[in-house]
Length: 305
Figure (cartoon, rainbow, N blue to C red):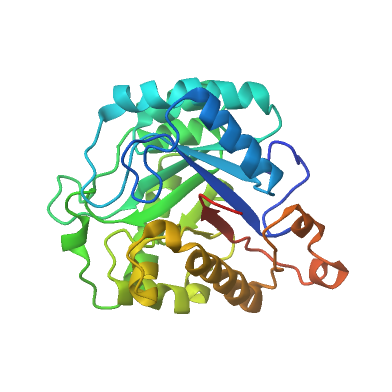
């Protein structure tokens, strides 16, 4: 049985919701690009997020905002590896995730101490692409051999084309179908179902209305055996709802989406709630532990304060 948390070998999906704190190592991320430009800054951010209750730190060295320029695996590794090595050395029991869609980056990251691979193209569907996808064909076999947790995120196209691919007859049904097809491909490549985390990909080839539809229908995506990761992270749809063009002013909108996600999946699967401080680690209370939850929502936000 896979253990998702390095520092808690007895933890199993469903024991409690998890918080994922994001460390963007890019100059052009939409909400905080350029804030972390060297290893000491990355170390300070890691210590801060862990102190505030993050269970998983997610390091990203390639911006995936709409229109972002891809730097390639070599450029991504140059940004990523120094910070990853330093954070691993400073926090040996921390659970570290790396956000990448390159198998070469994933391989180097795992060798440097990463625990999870978070693949924004893991469940990519791109009509017209050679194999119907922009995913790296080497990723599945690599992660299957590693046996680590693997986030399959739904997306379409790449950063430059995804906004033009937000066309669905039924966004909830199609996202679920495309996540399931990606799961089937992964299992056929030798992976194990218990490795997989599903992410509906809020903001990736989705309009505001489509993102809200996915949030309203999260129970339909809560497939037994696959935890859900929800990543609102001050995204455009929150700005549209709040009429707030400034990403850094969308903190409370992000918190509201995370709270909604917990409550919805709590109703569906019996998971417990959380608070944005280390005090939330006391959950689940005794009554929550008896509900037999099988899905753990993992909430991804770059700022937990």
